[in-house]
Image (cartoon, rainbow, N blue to C red; front, side, top):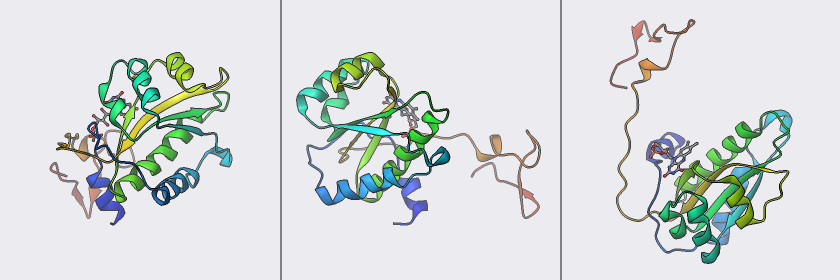
Length: 177
Ligand SMILES: Cc1cc2nc3c(=O)[nH]c(=O)nc-3n(C[C@H](O)[C@H](O)[C@H](O)COP(=O)(O)O)c2cc1C
């Protein structure tokens, strides 16, 4: 699969099949986390992959009762040292690479930003001096998922000056793209 196709196929997955993930796939996915760029190559990231049913069940109330969390193969907590300036960016790039690699392998993810940090920390035994930047569900998709719409490119891509529409080959970019 080309990167373009992976990007186009990706969408948030909130329904998961009861399927385990082979070790060779986890190896590839961990590599996607590892190879992400980070500020000054600080690699300010740690990830807790929660697989146990009991833990996932306890994470549901920690994430404001998002029930699908109990059905994913792994709930991932992205953890960083908050004293480093780019902690949120570094974790996000790493998990974005994970997400795209997951799509290529036939899996899906959903970012989880709605969570109670102290509750997630307590369930996953994450030290107080760490920050849970973002969480994610991961697993084999099940059922039908409908892509969500996006704003037209012309509404957020500018050329040279803020607010000036971008021209390709002398033409303003299409409204439809
Ligand atoms: C930082 C962030 C936090 C998010 N938090 C949640 C969440 O807590 N629960 C959820 O179901 N989706 C969450 N999402 C997924 C978004 O709702 C989703 O990406 C958006 O609606 C676009 O849909 P798509 O991913 O299917 O293209 C989050 C996405 C991001 C980037």
